[in-house]
Length: 210
Image (cartoon, rainbow, N blue to C red; front, side, top):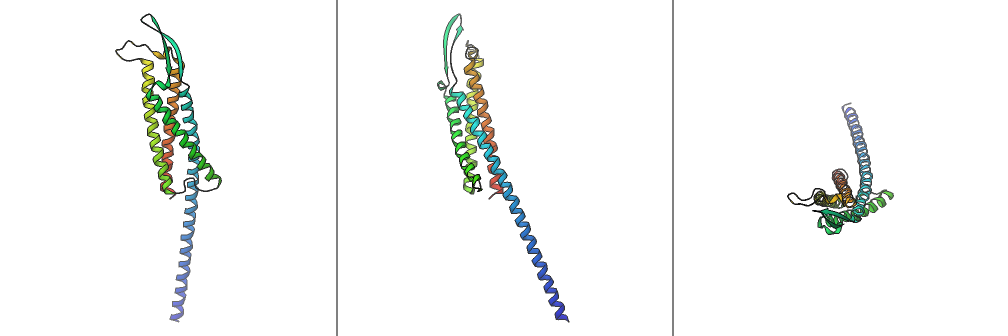
C-alpha cells in the first residue's frame, strides 16, 4: 500500500514538473516573440529616420552650394560691389562637407536597411554593426552641430556686422545669400536631431535585440 502511494506521488511530481517546463517554454516563446516584434519596430523606425536624415541633409547641401549673390552697397557715400559665395568661408565649406558625408552615410544605411527588411532579416544583424552605427551616428551628429554652430556665427556676423567696426549689415544687400545660409543651417541642425534619434535607436537595439 505504501509503495503504491509512493508511486502515485512520484507520478504527480513528474506531471507537475512537465507542466512547469511547459509554462517555462511558453513564457520564453512569448518573450522571444515580443522581443522580435520590438526589434522589428526599431528597424522600421530606423528606416524612417535614415530617409528623413538623408533628405534633410541633401536639402542643407543644395541650399548652401547655391548660396551666391552679387550686389551693390553704400559705405560712407561710396558704392561698393559685393560678391558673396559660400566657398569663401571655411566654416561653410566644413558644413557642406559634413552634410555631404551625412547624405552618403544615410543613403548607404538606407539601402542596406531596405534590402534587409525586404528579405525579412534584421536591419542590424550583429552587435558589432550596432556599435558601428551608434558610433557613426554620434560622430556625424556632433560634426553636424559643430558645423551648424560655426556657420551660424558667419551668418550672424553678416547680419549684424562687427561690433566697434563701421561695417554695414551686408544681408540688406545680400538677402538671397543670407536667406540660403540661414535655411541651410536650420536643416543641418535638424539633421543633427535625426542623427541623435538614430543613436538612441541604436542603443535600444543593443539592449533589446542582442
